[in-house]
Image 1 (cartoon, rainbow, N blue to C red):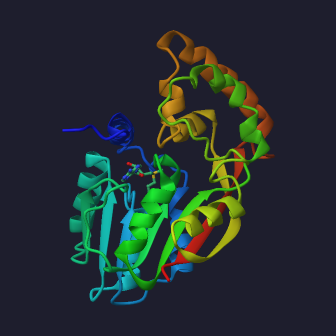
Image 2: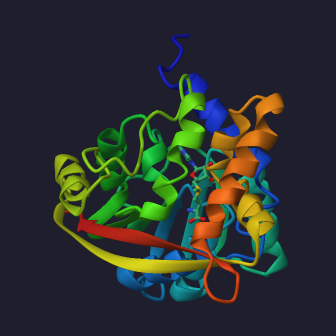
Length: 279
Ligand SMILES: C[S@@+](CC[C@H](N)C(=O)[O-])C[C@H]1O[C@@H](n2cnc3c(N)ncnc32)[C@H](O)[C@@H]1O
């Protein structure tokens, strides 16, 4: 059997998100939920619709979609991480949702029936893909005619985070996740770039909106816990054990410049939503 070129990468993404499954979006800072609110509102699924949520993680988008489509609709979530899938499926059962199914599946090669979905969502996942244009082309064929794809990505980066870059830079080399989703010249670096990506996949009428999401951390420990609770965990885990404390302490020192009057630590995240249609 010929090994897929990204086989190692998929395994490492699955391992990364397996590792963070319990802390993911669960350290007292609301990040993925508010983004999911905006994405679902923009995609605007209707009662009875079938919707696919790609890279569903712990279900931030998936569960909101399930409410929107109601008992006559159906929501499918797929993710590479078996633990994300198992935990989210368990939660769907615990919530008594009969209109949700969750499966381990690679977004690059979803084995789902063409022409099935009224909408597809992918929140904060598209930049993990080895070939986003190829994936979007495949997703297009899963949609019904005029069906909608909606993705969220990072927009302009808060300069405060850039102040941390040099701390992590020495450890970046060799990381499988080489695309910087915030690179202004990259495939996800501007509204125009993401819209171009959509067009290259045969989707039409791409359009983007941006909004700011403000996060407040009670203290440096909560900031650290949050940065370890999602994909950014990769940056910390690339630091050798003997150097971790030094890098973390240096980051904590810089966090003092992020404090607001009441002592909490503030950061602002500009988020982009991009929608497009199957012709
Ligand atoms: C940052 S999380 C976002 C999860 C969720 N969409 C949310 O908004 O909370 C990215 C998710 O994409 C999944 N993922 C990354 N690459 C994938 C792929 N090729 N196929 C399926 N899922 C993938 C990861 O396992 C992870 O759960």
